[in-house]
Image 1 (cartoon, rainbow, N blue to C red):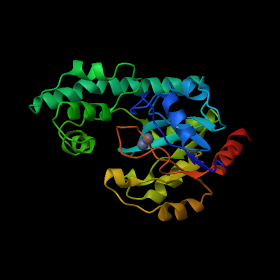
Image 2 (cartoon, helix red, strand yellow; image 1 turned 45 degrees about the horizontal axis):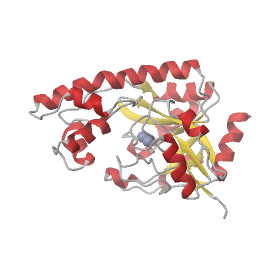
Image 3 (cartoon, protein in one colour; image 1 turned 90 degrees about the vertical axis):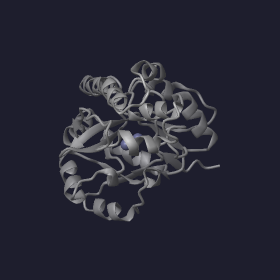
Length: 280
Ligand SMILES: [Zn+2]
Ligand SMILES: [Zn+2]
């Protein structure tokens, strides 16, 4: 059987997924995926295990990352593929972003307590033991566990989303800087799920990223778990102006979000095109 498809956007429990990198690779292998990228938020700590786990069949694995960024005060995610694990400038930046993630946890919990909810920071710390890059989904999980909400989406909509009462701003990297950094270390930068960027002019935003060296855009993406419905055609057409590579993936988080591994994929050839760009 030809392994023709690749899922280029997944998370492990190094950030806010629920699977270990080993489980992720084994599942992908069982599903007959031809390629998979691990793209944890602001950390490379799952990558070594991800690359090393042995499976019986051939499956291309790509070391990746999803960097928390902003553009004109809006949240933006930049994916990096074929990231070198030992890059000092990248690791320094990621460490700064992870510290910002840790720093905001007690602030979020305090806001929830002020709202009258019975949660403690110790319960949260207990839940995130061993997690390199914790985030709001972990807080949402705790609220679910305590019966305060029934779904993580409800936790976001009631408390944790931007403009909701327990939202705390997090330090992020400038999107343009992230693209420039990824290119400078030989990685392949991609704009993740472009329609979640609330930029009034998506075209100009992508154009600005291209100037810094953006090479791809995540065209294939299922927005429905965020309650949004977009077709990929608009951004596909837009990106043709700059010859950007069309990537895609499931944004699989295990039990934390509802998307399934391999539910959104791209042809396996996309990986080869990426590799050619970063090695030439
Ligand atoms: Zn994202
Ligand atoms: Zn993601």
